[in-house]
Length: 222
Image (tube, rainbow, N blue to C red; front, side, top):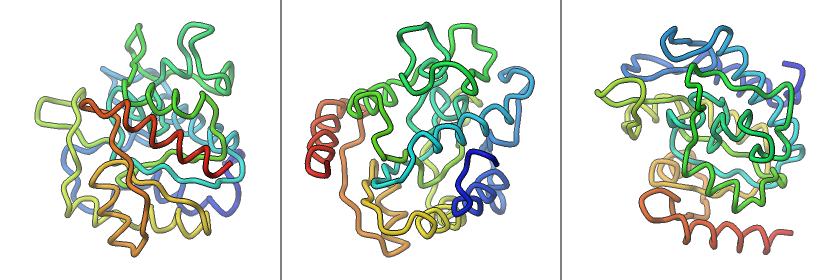
């Protein structure tokens, strides 16, 4: 992993290998590909996207922790709270740090997927990583009974069985400011004995409050 700092090698290795145990209805997009949904070499490209993103974050001061990858976002981009359209969409609409290689789309969707929550998050960040790492308590994609193009909240036994990835990440990052987005992320952090500032999830009408909370946080910590 050329772009991943040495101290992050273990959490990334666990991420790419997971999840542990029985995990029905869960896709690990860093090692799995669906021929009906993914382009050729999609899993490798998602690893490349994530590693290049982490390189651009640089020294991490904040960890913004969501619940799980969504099919409109990290399932195809490889990056939490980020859609492939933000990485490889029309010029001028991409995130400024993601213009050109090594970033690329991975799905077979000609329009590319766009996640509303991801748009809100990056808008609040001003389009720049700003020393803030985006991650998820359950860092893979759990889908509902409707099929792979759906989302579900990971069940407690599922995320508890896989806290080793988050635990390894926190150990590698050291003393950083942790912000929890969603109840699952709050519960996961509490399970590891980590107290975190809670932010309103941007979905389901929470976009304005989330944006103001995160912008206030960024202003305090500059």
